Image (cartoon, rainbow, N blue to C red; front, side, top):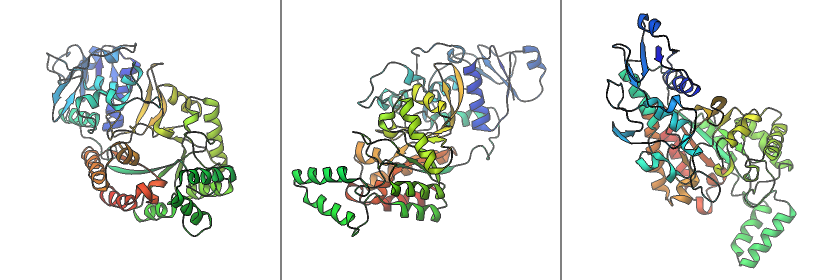
Length: 430
């Protein structure tokens, strides 16, 4: 498809590549030459202030022709059963809002570069999101918009480009609850429980340490069993940082942990789970990536931030410096929904430097801790929430990424019933 534009910018090039090539599987060429556009006999459209002739035309907002980062006037418009932003008026526009500007605004995470109040961990809050405020956070609006655009352009979306898939992912914050903690951490835990009068916890720890009971976080056999049963291709994100207030992982110097990592690496893809303390610390982050790479004896190219803690563009810039190719952090800890409004992987656009990058972002919409710890959902409500998101992703043939933890699948204490729930999710979603 040939597309006439008044000016080709980095923002515009990135957005049209994403919408047409990545989401539709349609090859495009951008041009500013009106004469060659008029003479072109193949599929074509124009994007700008006014149509050139009688070709399909999308009226443009200013966003893709700007260079600065500033507050945008996000007037919502009703569209299908959702909303659109950047409405356009007059002319015979394909869509009543600038679908390209709206897509760029969400996928570039433009709003996360603007001043806002962050939570106690420095994270962008869903309540600050325009999608949350419009009541459409639970919808992959970008996918819905783009598929409607394809329909209005009479373009056939390639089934090879858009095909529903279920991606299981596991965050290994701490491989074991009691085992392999070392003398000082184990002794400290005993003293803490003793002072609190928590004798049941002491008995539980004793049963695990003396091999009378399995460690409650050790759900790896179950994970491998489900992987084989449902033909999953999971991705594991392993915490390799030093012990700290918000980093309770097992030391990667422990032989048992090294053996577990190697075992996981034999069954699945493995990425780094950068520690809470490595947040925006390039030296510490590099050390953690090197630790994991050394144990696996291969390059580490995937990542998901611990606590989902990131700040744009710094966090992603640090990953790119370490040759990380794929990041899976794009989601919320406190809400179910599509942070970037999309269930399709996309390249990170560095707004600060105004350029597309090599880092692919894989957005997720549901995390186990969100349902349990933030929304206080029980098993039934959690199942309904997850399957509702799966249904939304299926409608647009997107990628459903589920974030869970080995602790969750251990099924003990607050996670009772979750191994059974996870199986039901796999039966429904795979």
